[in-house]
Length: 83
Image (tube, rainbow, N blue to C red; front, side, top):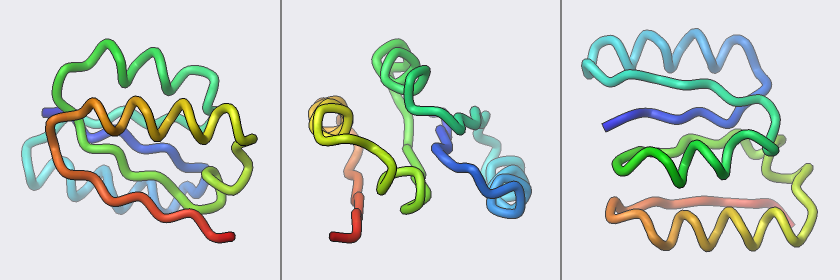
């Protein structure tokens, strides 16, 4: 399984790098949405951790696309978006 981070905060990245090492999970960090959907579709098993600031910047089309991709993942995922 891979930890995929959608985030723009370097402190969060460092924290989750440490967590992923302890859990022996590889991690990829994305700070722009454009690359994220393709990677999520390519990787069969992942857990997505997304910063609310990144999610808030998504337009409606991208938000719906991300929800659809997540719904097809066999792992349980919780995603929160303000507003």
